Image 1 (cartoon, one colour):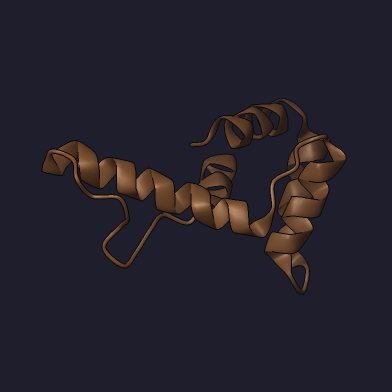
Image 2 (cartoon, rainbow, N blue to C red):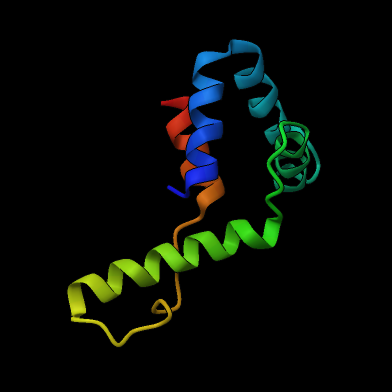
Amino acid sequence: MEERLAEILEMAKADPALRQALLDTKKEKYPVHAFCDKIKELGYDISVGELIEMGEEFEAAMIRSVNGGGVNSPYGAWDDMYDVFFTALEW
C-alpha cells in the first residue's frame, strides 16, 4: 500500500472516531470523493485520480517483478487502492 495510505490506515486503527469517520464516507453518494475529502482534513492531499494511479502503478510493478521487466502498464486491470484500504481497515 502507498505510504500515505498506510499512514492514514495506522492512524485510523489507533483512533476509533477516525476509523468510523472514514467508514462513514462509504455511505455517501460519492464515497471515493468523500473519502478523499476526509483525508484532506487530515493533511493528506490524495485525489480520486491518484488513488487510481496508485493501484495501476502497484499492479505494473508486480507484473514487472515476475516478467523480468519491460512492462510499464498492467494487463487491463489494477488493484483498487480505495478497496484495498477499506479491506485492511475493516479486517
